[in-house]
Image 1 (spheres, rainbow, N blue to C red):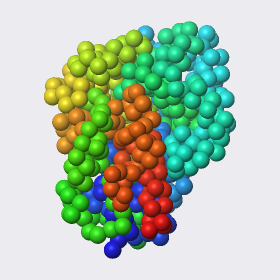
Image 2: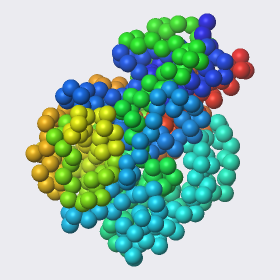
Image 3: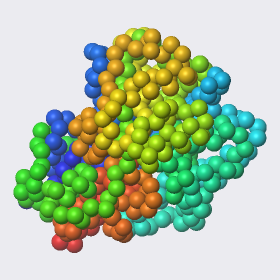
Image 4: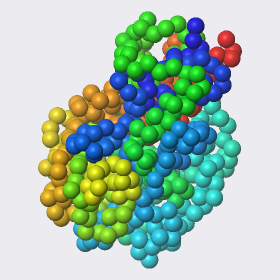
Length: 469
């Protein structure tokens, strides 16, 4: 009998398996797709030689993850590549605000009226970042805070809505960039704890950047899988699990799946009936004949580029998708251009480019024209560079990754108390009604992103049970 079976070979499932195998437990992973990866994959979606990331592409939480940093993933081929700028936010006048590794450079891009306010916001937390990130990405049930005072100070700043936090800024440049940071998790700007979301992304950039993985996001998953195999773990692909009886006998079962899927497989009925999924996204992967022709020079060297003319336009787009059940006319966009720093991603002189906008859950329309009209505002002539495109709306994204219910790449709405307490209001979020069944997906704390911390935290709950048995 195995000690643990993990269902789902995404970053969280693989991390949970690795953490258990490192502690001497026998582990097997079962994945429905033909390769490991989940939200961290790389495929030739458009033309031969153009390597795209169907899901996550830039990894500010990955490079800062306490779980990943504790593992020898570099030994298994993971290499973080850092663009000249982690992120840029261009404006229609050809200028841009930036999120740089340097706090001073970032503050200067906001203008003299807000530079000091930004420094006062982030500088108190940076010296204690490693402890802080470990504390807020864990739970009291899995690890006691190492610096409860700093964590409490962070909570006082971050738990109110982001609009409260940005009220300290006087000009639109800082407000717009910060609104875009909150938009990465598809949360309306007035929501609970959205200030913390924006602040985490900013601090992550200053601490270690927003890198891409050389060769694509698949490199993260492949490194985790290779390490697991060296630890004696097994991985079975092309193995769809529909019932617990489909799995071999084990002392514990760990699911890197949505709560909905887990309830169906394990027969939990309506246990997760109140779990809310968020809006979906419409994503386009481009093969380009050259770099994106950004008007703002800062955007040409940034790994990630946010698109939204001002904070009002961003908030309007977020509200349209999440509260008004319609596709926005001018979508807020997150774009990533990996080939500005990774030449392995496209043939010489060519580029890959990744872009998405928010749409209602399950939306079946085509947002391509609206996305490209937005791009043309900040990069005139963009359409002339397009060699091929691969589009994916909510149905296609859900088909690629079953955890993206309705196209929700966050695997659950990041709003209200569900920001912090997911998938249930419980101090033991990784446990389920069955004492031997656990959940470790992005639907558990600390939530969305390629960071493995949900798997890391869940593994702690699992090995405590195994040692008690």
